[in-house]
Amino acid sequence: MSLNSIFQYFVPKDKKIFFPLFEQAANNVVAMATILVEAVNSNNTTTREELFKQIDKLENKGDEFTHQIYLELGKNFITPFDREDIHALATAIDDVADYIQGAANRMSLYRIDDFNEHIRKLSDLILQASIDLEKAVRELKDLRNVRNIADSCIRINSVENQADYVFDRAVADLFLYEKDAIRLIKYKEILAALETATDMCEDAANVMESILVKNA
Image (cartoon, one colour):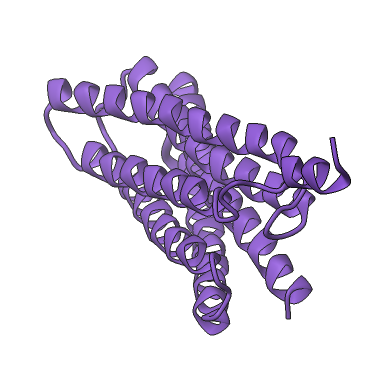
């Protein structure tokens, strides 16, 4: 086998192969966040349970995207940006999906029927951050609209700060007003999972900001 043939083996047949996978993973997160918002605003138990099942299915779908990115990373010698950044971004997006599903699972398993304003607000913030995450990921394929990516990352960071405040206020209210210790624990775990989902969005934004700096 010639040297050129060996080199061609390592060159991805589609140099853009990672970008569609990232976009599909980010779109999947937006779909999960959208369903989560619908679930916490629903007063129908049967409807909520069906929505939680949809979130579970989408999380499995997200795992497939992440696994495919890892496989492509192992197969391709040449990548569009640093290998560690590809791995970190895929992991962060997957983590967002994991925590959305984790929050939804707790709501279902703990049989929570009363979704207070803090849970609804955190769910809204997850959706906002997910939409900006998807926008930024979509711009990665050519890096021509650096300003758009940076602006989306800034908005994600702002949303995460808002989520921190909502979480702190929510936990404070639990300790001030909730007399049932078991109920307090249930709500605190749900709130923590929701807030962590915004942290993972911020992690993804940080990776993309790193990519921008390295490709400036």
